[in-house]
Length: 203
Image 1 (cartoon, rainbow, N blue to C red):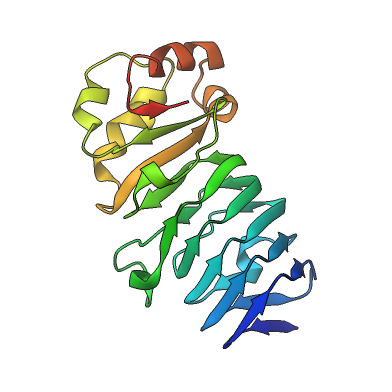
Image 2 (cartoon, rainbow, N blue to C red):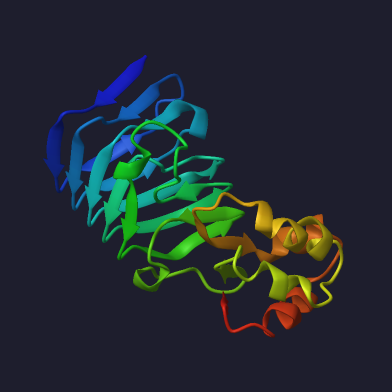
């Protein structure tokens, strides 16, 4: 069963996206203002087409994996819950309507982000999650500097050495230290000591 929210404006409502047998389409031409959107479905059952979200709260109740928020123009929104491999903001040429996306004045401080990227936005307007999450600002521009030092475990060889190959629109990348430590054979303490050397890594 498909659920379509399109070509309308909704204000002050709570939207529960929870039907395990349904596919949800937000957009096109949807505007949500001061709404709470509760997500309980996997990424493959959620599609965001060019839409606007203003002062909304997104409560991710089931980890959202590898989801592109490309197509969503978000201003003043708040995110809660676990997200991994997600992309926010205008990822150039990723899909039709990419240029309509944006992320501005949004609050991710209550979210757990892992391997998430921000594209083409002003990171100064965003509130980022703190440790054990950490965010590398301008990872492409800073890749040479980051590669000039030793990193614990395989984090340097797998992650840092490949920063220069990220999409050109990437302005920041956020990681979750416990997962990185487990995956790349190091500890959270060693990672924290490494990132504290750089003032452009938010933690």
